Length: 453
Ligand code: ATP
Image (cartoon, rainbow, N blue to C red; front, side, top):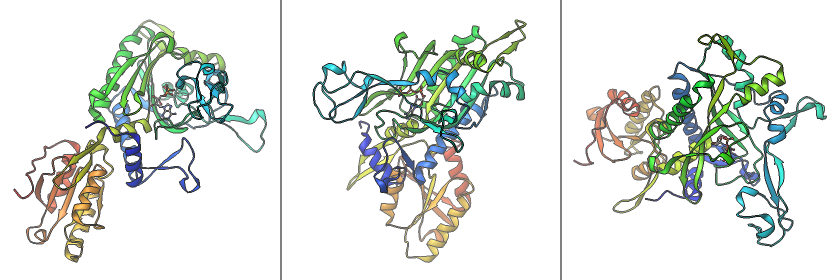
């Protein structure tokens, strides 16, 4: 099945409580979206999977959680005040604004992509993407501060504190997950390009002589995370090394991890950049601090090089939804299934009474839900017929549904149904929480049999 387009995903996301347009009752706001009850779970699961693999399972990376607003001198030193801008073009007729990169050709020669009028596009002008605000009660130039456009700069600004307090030697990394803000000229494609989004970035400090080896390590490790941990189809993912003329000012080599989105084509999910010593040197010069470490082997101080894997959480959410979405034709109806890895699923187990007007079944099913909750995220639902309840859970990617039926009252067992195969297992109540926790964690294999067999 070809991947679904963004409209299909945005509609499912809204209908099922994953993502809503921000402040929708007032008409929404371009580039801002809210995560609903299921979306926040999915997003948290993706963040946890990154933190676990990039920080907790390694002994050479530590985390921080820095303030979003930093001393504005950070953004002067980093080059963002002077250079974090996109060339933009305005249409004099319809007043819309476009990224020059998105126009196919020189503005003078082409028609406005929105209103179609010719000769109305302006020459490109630089537009700084940072949101500015004022700190304190007085709005004067001295009080200007910026909402961070990336999380990375806090890792450079805190380099000395982290290295000293954690007694770190090269190589080591500092990771962070947090909000970033960019006044994007053309937000869109659902949650692909936002003005407020979450990033997961890690600055890995290495001896300059080791930069190529660590660059290759992180490109490989990050690619494997997308396929093995997030479960994204390998044939819709590729690595794209940047050409020399598209490298950022701070980067010596960059490789993007891209996904082939329907209607959009290959687009960036993550970039792995070799930032050299650009940032530490810039901050050392601007702050007057020595941002370096002592290399015992060489007996000298060095300014480390930095390898940075940087990704957007929202793009990962979008990719998981697009890549997992499948439609199947059953005998009587179409089944929509979100085939996402169980670890990522917002709900791991849904407990459903076969007959909702039988109080003993409802009571049993509710008690089972309470027993499941300490082990895996579980929910109880009896708001529709069993067939509808299954479809709802399939659509939100719940890997296991547990059905409590009249027989359960006699045999003290219930039926677990597997989302992907729709096969079933009969398991006694006491063993269900452990069984589902093991299945979700991949510790045991599913042994289901077809329904009625
Ligand atoms: P793009 O070329 O798409 O604007 P970028 O190269 O500017 O992205 P980086 O500055 O390298 O992006 O940021 C690292 C990651 O943060 C990106 O790979 C992307 O996943 C995410 N990201 C960047 N900008 C946005 C945005 N406006 N909305 C959502 N995610 C974003």
